[in-house]
Image (tube, rainbow, N blue to C red; front, side, top):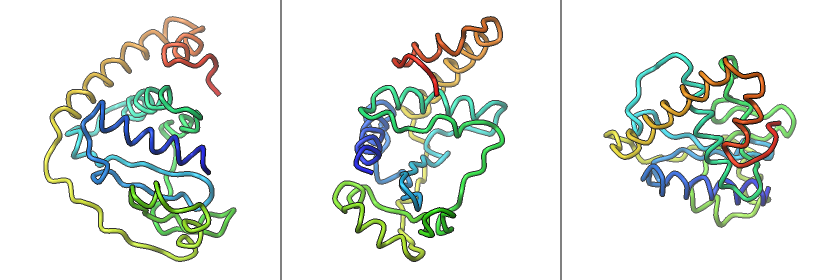
Length: 174
């Protein structure tokens, strides 16, 4: 869990530095087992639904992952058929709830304290996002462009996965 925590905190820093997103605007959840989910509300990026949006999200996640010390960011979840468990549902392995946590709780509570909180449903009042963050919107547009360039290359070259992985600073995609 400490590796996951450190990577999640690095991801929050990445979002702040690259996208200028305040950590109090994102939604953070303990998964109910060993993970942490970080969700950025769509309104921050100002995007509309589009084809291959999951691929754009994966491009962003791979970029975030390249800066994390433990590489625990799961990039396999960005296919177009993946289901994402909603908050306050029970994890089938641990019987703990997926619960919202604050950035301060992520930083300061022990794994045991978080797991204790996850024994029951929990609500946290997240800061409402009322307008698009224009820097985040610009960075998101860059991610879209990068994804489409990489996607186009993938259709041309069977060795794409290797090149795609090296583009993000790790040798082999899992």
